[in-house]
Image (cartoon, one colour):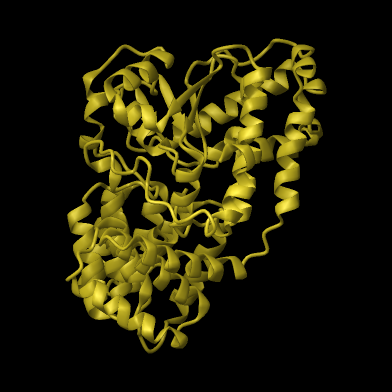
Length: 476
């Protein structure tokens, strides 16, 4: 799950006028990107550069598109070219920082965020990017600047106010003032929640209906036909539950590839529904024939292998990891499509998980900005996972507890690799040395050796946490 600190827009230039052919190309690119024709969009902008080689904004836009494709080294070169043409544009520093941090070059990314702050000291998002990568000290000028901005927050719109308070919450927590930090998290989340139209009843109702449709009897009655591939690995669970760490351990194996949080399964099912109306039913397998099931399964495998743009092996990876966490709602379909797929469920103390979610401005996780809604979502997710445990054959899902992973990394890593039916490789214990691209909110943590400071994190008093505790119910 990405957060807003890593979602920077392409750089904008202050050029007085855009040539007509460039504006036309921009509209073309917009249409092509909307159709996911990224290669053609890049080619369109490169054609512009033949005529206008010094348009920094076009170089920056190409860099953003290359990053979207996973071509980070090429993206970096394009952004550096843009920066040479527009050295005083702070959004270019943040774009560079995002690419560098995803490549694991954390110190360089931190320096870019600090340069952006120097160029635009009144922009809260620059500070938010910085504190997500580096713990500030009490005497850091950036913290003093954040305090000054907070004293003038009325001049910012609600979105920038939220970024400011998320940044201050993280900075104060890191400097030993967690109570003060949490007051800023409360303010930040309230601002974000006010901008959303989250329908809690629809979200929780959809999860309940999954368990109602995928009963043990209904699944046992289905034909036991599925794709024989052992390549798919799905990591599911809640954000901030250790999923990125598990993916990093597994993807450090030479026979495994971590694709990250990709929407490939949902996209495959959506396209299958356009080809075959039976897919639109809650329990489609009762209406689908074997050929339709196998075609859908094969389509997904092809799409996932296409994600491995930087894979250098002579053949596709033996294990392809999809870390889209909310695929927990699709576990019934996953098991039917690929009976031999591996499903890893990452788990962590419920309160620690929710408080960690509450401290990060995630995009596309509308349930995470209110303590009560967050607790109720967690409880429904937990109920659905318990349903799968009861419904599917024993051993289908591997539960990995974050606390166990931190306390005994060698044993838990070997357990994960064995479950995926791969030979043990010691590189899996040196996961922090991997240079693979990581895009999630944990991208800085997985670049360092395992630490225990996140166990039993600081918690506010029970009265402050009452909405969360009530939402979690017995899980608290």
